[in-house]
Image (cartoon, rainbow, N blue to C red; front, side, top):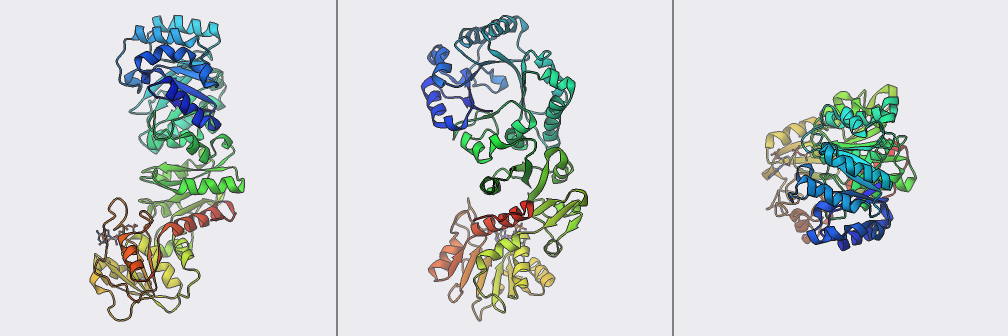
Length: 487
Ligand code: ATR
């Protein structure tokens, strides 16, 4: 189920948020701590106005609540007054004073309101996560809930393994007889927000667009883009390992293709300093393959059992496919993606100038040499251009060593200069584009860098990196699923 956290100041605004997201959500959580004082009194009517089951929650500041100090008696008095107004669930922290909890739970049970016993850890995943959840469940009487903050991929797996104990052992099942809620917060925990249902968690939380009630909340429509409701333990999991990874556009691209092809799979961002661990836990995740991004593209090759020829030549892999007992196979789809927008041009025997000599340039030079172009590489650090050129049998030098005779057919810009937010940057401000046919900048944010803008003004055909992004992803999709992506 999907629960919308309602954290507006007024009942009216919260109801508007429910209306705007109704098609995506199953229930709502009213966060009383965010309501202004006079609105709290109206909150008894909220479930009826919402028209869906509502969780009543009044969070203390130390548990992530709005920073309005309130003493415990007053907080419980408000919960007591409100819950009878048709709330389906009431959330009570597991460490609250038993003297206050007892009368509230008795009254809630009397009224048929389900009780969630929750705890929050904004600093870590506690070592006793499973024990604390089963204790909070009180022998299957309550729904235990934990929202914890993983600080590593190892922490992420502690959460997933805890969920496994709750779903797959007799003891865990007994404790979680009424269900459980278990979520990891922040970037490391993000996969648990999408896999919540598959992990056995009763629900996942989300926030209205533009807000975030807890670290890692996304909007209901973004959850729908992940295909949340269709994800089960049988779903094949794919994802991108990187550090960072949360900014990646790959999940949106891949998940749309799984949906269009009707494939039972989900693609997640795995922000991680430890991509090997993600691979080690492949079985637990039902992991079919990974996209790999900065800074892991080189080291990931070490864990591959089978290495594609392009990976050996480029020295980097952006795609890892799980071949089961045969191990993981490393591919590089960057160079193929790079070539896709150039497929209608005759490249063989023509001149290309590549600006930059980093990882991206390596894939570009590999592709262009494979196409039979005469490649010259120029770079701020001349020695790096020379080394790259030596690897691929072409010429290389400093930024001022661009051939001054014939303009090349193609110029490719591979550095990060000009990328958002530093959009005024230009790696070659004095370069004369006249006579160049195609200028290709791998950057796609902004759509048109200063470099591309100048090239366009000089009459060149211009390409940015967006199509390359889609094309390299399409090739990954084909490697992952055997299906062709339409893009
Ligand atoms: P990527 O994997 O994106 O290619 P990289 O391997 O770190 O990233 O390579 C960055 C490239 O951008 C390098 O060619 C780098 O030049 P240096 O080798 O001299 O470092 C180039 N680059 C980065 N910032 C630059 C700048 N301000 N001016 C010119 N070139 C720059």
